[in-house]
Length: 562
Image 1 (cartoon, rainbow, N blue to C red):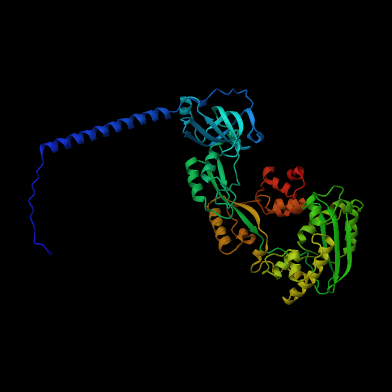
Image 2: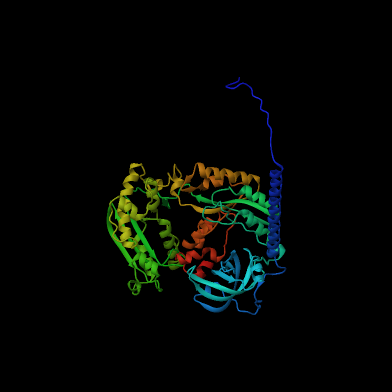
């Protein structure tokens, strides 16, 4: 289609004078000469920069050489301004600046892993400025100069006069080639809040040290396995695929030493112990209190202090309200335990978190009375509460007492705890009767039903796949823990682990494992039964457990090592 004008044909004629053509040619030639000159200047500048950036041969040295005999100060020892000191460390940040005055300033940060410091160095000569550009992140250097309070960074900095590159200190494995270790407990960044180094870097380090294999045991997940496989192939290190699991019992016993006794007619001894710490082996009883409950009423009381013959820690004094003065004239623990055993007779024992209190009583019976462990029927109100009231967020004694309007005058004093637990027991037994639980030996019948896995406290356990069957079972357990048994964390019930145990090695894990925790709180004989479930026991360096000393869960370094 056509619109508007019909087709047009234009004839063009150009009239240009010779003078204008000559002017155009001269202008173009001048522009070409200018471009050539700029290109030449740029090339000379690049050549100059290339010469300036050319790295010096050999180790970097700015200023004078720092002799090996020079005293090296650790960075954590620098507390104030100093006239002249020498430090050394790893450069983790470096930059060079051209100042308005024309001088060159090099700013770098070093650490010797005791502390870190910012170092400033001004170029004294042109050669210094060239050398400063060679100072890079990743070097190890010695620096000598003064320590000054810098107004710009508002901190102590070093004004360096001399900087020498040194060979970095790296950790080495000096074990003979045929005796290299294999790490069987290792976390990658897929372990939430428990690792920083990638599995690739860790495998690379294992190769440098000559380790033949390495195990990956992330918390509850296997998401690093593909990266681990690639790193294993790249570095020629055998990869052992594993997992640090949250192991739970399908149901924790509510009753121990079950007997066919009618709950309504039984006399109960509700007891509580206060101790110098959490270990039944290394700590001792400082207060033992109990009440007898019959027909819903407290009919008798027992309260005794015991002399531990050592000062109490500040934590125990604050927690219990018991002081050294209250115990200095108290009878011996042996006398208190003997009186308690006679007073209890064959009645049913009751405690909140009974496994802890019974653990202390068992050790005391054996050590002090040379007697067998507790034979009486036992009820744990903590586990009974978890069974009867699964909707509660927690089942601590003070929480349960508050729920049922039971007065708890002074928590963590044995006599007050026992009275409150006694009234709580009466309430619980009525609610158990509503569920047709009439006899002591019926209490454990509902142990593994419904959401029992939620009521158990998880222990850590290490699972290692021995072969492809084990790897397949490991994947099944991970799926089960996330899909069917997830409660706050992915949990693996012991029954499921037993079912899919083929091809797996089970290790006792860290201080959150039941073997180590058992050794903190129970006698070694009791823990042997617990340990028999595992294929191998993990004994870690004391440093891994040092936080337990700070928390006063373990008494001292000697007890920790034992």
